[in-house]
Image (cartoon, rainbow, N blue to C red; front, side):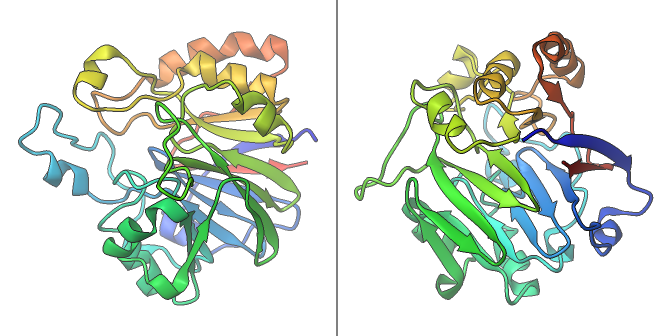
Length: 287
């Protein structure tokens, strides 16, 4: 199923933009920076991996990599309203924000928190109400509200499982608004992934592109896909569009927008379109 993606410049601040529901047949994707997104249909609003604080700068202020933000948050965690489901792909703070989870859930009393079962204890420590947690296992498929979600394992930089065999790094396939979206969380290529994801038939894939190297590894900074690895996976699973992410947040762990465009342009001739997110725009997905 091919999708059409267009970008609209937001006239209003994001907190006001999010008060206007998408039209029927549209899925709106708003980038929050790093791997964070708000994904909306006429009836559902989902948030994945929002990092909207300076928690990591405070935690690492005396370390080699200080984790100062390169971009301000486009919205405060306490400004997010109308959220139906909050997802975390794993428990690293730039995906499971120690200063944001509690605020989002507090201000959205019917919101449920969705995560791998392996990180439930950490999620609770960071503000998730145990009664509102939906803990998922590998390859589990459930219906949330009016859409379907399935959790898949990811490798950051390897597949790690807890004592119960549940992956600690996950991705999610969302069937929202007639689209099938795959958000891998943090991930590098691994042998079973192309076939595993292709079987779920995503038409839009959201993949990290900041890469990895020995310097970052020596400081326990786990890596992700390079730009071309992400594009190759998108082609292998027959997605029509790639939305790159996990860049522009920390100066030691990013790639430039110019590099991403340079690497992805040749893939257009191979049938892959891409949409480079910007916090000031809305990505509109239609079929």
